[in-house]
Length: 522
Image: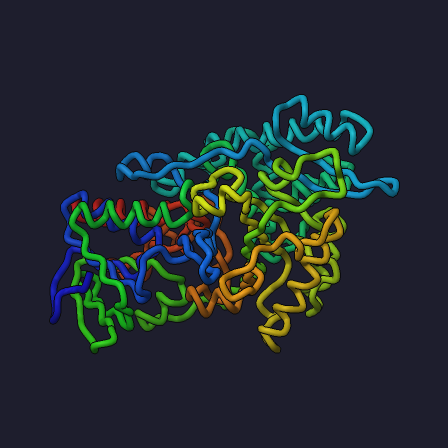
């Protein structure tokens, strides 16, 4: 839809049609506000989209973001979204070699199977008992912290009282997560599996004194009050399509192909200048919500840019003719790939990879994790592909900061992809290349994206999937009542860079909408 020509006045103009902007648009339009969403691309969804990346192949992949944990059911219910999630029956599988034989750790499929898997790998029940105690603790924290994400920001002391567990607070909020991992677990592989939740999209050591790894860990274990990561039926685009439909149905105007280039405000009213292929226009509003990074917010408003952000991940999408056989014959590939398949993510391997990357080198043994969306949700495959047993694989590589790609993004991408897939092949009974499907032009169905690719394609600063370092979910100096406030009273940040942003959650969009509605009532 095209925005009206000339200068029109709206109650709210939202810059960016990603999922958070669409959440805000739907809430505000349902509350009777006039809303205009300006999206620079020719489609909505931002990083939460489903696309057909392979020529002539009927497979709609979640090209960028791919799993859902942090989206509150409250948002789905409030907005009446036609959107479903499916739970993965397997949490993870981590292949290993012990005493010269292939083995692994399968977590999921019931308590008995998980306990037996720990005993087979480690030779005792001790690690499983420690695992249970640790995740019972994170579960208690999840149940208390997650509901606060859609409420006004608590104070630090207030959130600590809500958690009500001094040991859990110290473990997650005060001490480097590496200390807890080393204190509670003995097995290197088990330690690594626990630590990975602290490193997704975050370049940090287990003992980083900044605790950026702790903040990442916290957001990965509190989702939904359980920490479960679920599969979106129809892919991530199903969520953003449902949000766009809800916003339009409530009366919001969504204008794609409209790039915001400047925001002028006196704190009471604002004007957003935008450009299209046909020229420049202006939209006036009482409030402006920016569903973009803090860096883009500064550029639009003429503010001081924040410190540079840096992403640290390799994202690879694949379509396979069949799942590969594993060297560990005790596990069915349909189970191993249904959850998170950890590669080179032992505790020592993660530390070595971080140290090498921090020194400016690609990790010699790059860690990564893989999962198969189509095992849980085959609807993303065309009927013919599904009938022939095709499957998708999504790989997310760790400890590959954007700085490593600066000298030659294309060449480094190929080098890293080759070494990452070699680590994968080491656990397979047949080469991955033999299982890859081909597109209509005969090319393997495989695409890789570095942080620099994500910056180019999506505008993510430095390719950082969180827009900047994740924040603690409590108020700090200057964070405001909802964590979306800026130096301009009527300009709010509703993207992943807001307090309690990051991940596919809709939380910043919800909170920005609540801030606008509160301002209208005062």
